Amino acid sequence: MAEAIAANPGRAAQVARSPLKRRRSPLQRKAFPYLLVAPAVIYLLGITFYPGLYAIYQSLFRVKFNSWTFIGLDNYSKLLGDNEFWASLWNTFLMGSGALLIEFVIALTLAAFAYRDPFIRSWRILFLLPMLFMPSAVSFLWKLAFNDGRVVSDILMRIGFIERPLDFLGDVWLARLSLIITDVWQWTPFLFVIFVAALQGQDAEIEEAARLDGARWSQIFWNISLPMLKPIIAVALVLRGIDIVTMFTSIFIITGGTPGGATETMSYFIYRTGFKRFDFGYASAASVLLLALTVIIAQTFVKRFFRSGRD
Amino acid sequence: MARRRKSGKAGSLALRYLVLGSWALFCVVPIIWFLTIGLRPRTEIVLPQPLYLPTFTLDAWNMIWSSWPMGSYLRNSLIAIFGSVVIDLLLAIPAAYSLARYKYRFREDIGFYILSTRMMAPAVVAIPIFFLFKTFGLLDSVWALMLIYAAMNLSLVTWIVRSYMLDIPPEIEDAARTDGASDLRILVAIIVPMCLPGIITAGVIAVIFAINEFLFTLLIASTQNAYTLSVALANFTGGSDGIIYNAIAMVAFIAFVPVLLLVVAIQKHLSRGLTMGAVKG
Image (tube, rainbow over all chains, first blue to last red; front, side, top):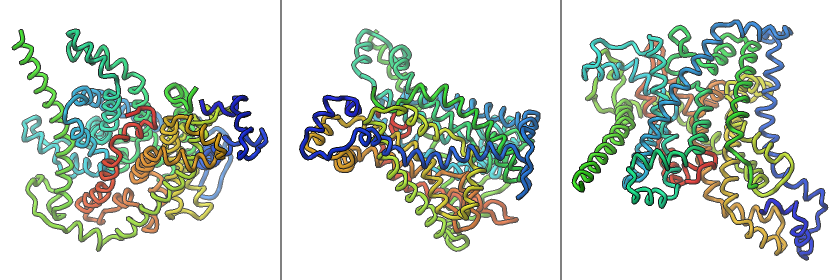
């Protein structure tokens, strides 16, 4: 309602009548909200919009150190025929959707079990712990556990699951799995915390009524709680999904894209092309395509779930 | 009948604690193990057969202070992170107020633009930003990191603060306005104090994301002038000795403790902060 002040003539008149109120022209009053939001927008334009334009511009050149040669769309046509690029796209999708799906299922299960538990505060802190470490540190933790320290293999052998140590980072699927487990371990709590809060926030009386009617706990969860949770699940998955698409740190530290590029994500592809092969024009072309992809995702999914103000 | 129901209940309770307990173990055991890595000598880490009962030593603690400029890493992290949060709050509070309280053309688009910068893959802007900072001579400086972290978290801080501002009943502002307070005064004297929990939550979450930041820092920092804890870890290698895991684990826990304290302090607001205000915990 308050945001309607500028548009509400009655209220505006009341404000104008107030003796202490400085008189401001209608133009000033109209400009005020823009002035408030402008510094933030300008800052963001400088650090996201300008780089975006720069990337588009640079993608039209072959950049060798300080010499730029205009080559039109050559970088793009080369990119579309580059198997490494398509592989990085595929790996991003594969590991990203795998990690997201596992995190979602685990977080929802845990939240369903935990949200009415008397010890929920303790569970929440325990489950949160992995998220509170720096991703670079977590990557080293799992690199040591899977590969350098051979701990996971050793434990699996002691249990009797396997007979010989597994080469976690040497095998295509095991390497991908290692990265997924690293992500799941660290980021399942992100979804868990959100789901628990949403479940706790729902009206307990509806559940109580269903329980008195003889509904079982699982029925209540599936038929009452879960449908109410849908919008929040969507928001949480979109936010986590965006972070997963940009996955970089764990790949940089744990695998470096090996074996044979099987764990190289788009972010790592851009990094390697730009800062290892110094092919900046080509890397920029890949950046532009990734940008287009994220804009599409943002437009289709995100716009639906977030609104700026009250209507 | 009654007994069956009771045993069913006990069964489901057992299942519940089995599930929750297993996940709790999966979370905690690697952390405890990593702590023992930080407290064991380097010779007992990378072995053909892992060692579960290592010798206790503070080698790693001594080593990080004597062999690396830990003081610089800590100082860089602190300056870049807190500076970025200050920038964020100065820019985000007015922006959030504008989005939450006024109705104007393009409001939705501006709000969505701010939000969408959160979705930009760091790798997309990494190269241009690298050249931008190179042009301005800002490579390998904490100021560059501060600017980047601020940009990275600005959308998040704006949206969280906005969400808390929406909770404040408009009548309070109307009353102040009839008393003759200017819009800016209302923002500073009434709105900011009233949404302080939101501002703190946003600040804490921005701090955590800034501590975690890796890609930009990796590109911008190249010496101890700008290395933060997060990226300094990746340089804890001793040439032929390989990765120095006990030092890494030690630094991981040094960064973990303040984050844990901050998160415990805002526990009630965490879910709301992580969803940028979309979920009210």
